Image (tube, rainbow, N blue to C red):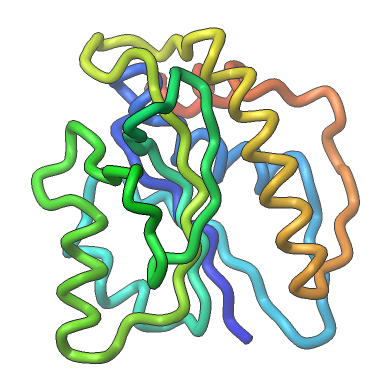
Length: 180
């Protein structure tokens, strides 16, 4: 099965970029192997509907993104299937022109969306232009990482740590600055 880990968000808006940062972090920190699956890491940024041709290449997609939850507090993490989004979750993001929710719904209309899971976190800051992640989101990213690792193991991946000392804020700084 072809699996995509898809990070969503605007890396220039603090916590809004956590999906992209965590996707890059996972790619750099671990090596994932499977005899039956492949895993690709995709920086989806704020592309939304322009990701459709990319998403169509996969059998299974795991999306990392910000979410809103009625009773959630900053840093809370939620893991759910797109086919069964909990009613208390509003997966709307903030800086995307067309949200991933609407993009995946459009794919559903024509019947070509792959199986989709979402690991979402409630952000604290989504409008300040900064590469700094807030403390609740940095702590929540550890939970997202744990949930993702557990899920990938369940899917049959073997996981080796290749960069034990890597820090998510380090990843945010590295990829948020121009190195020309």
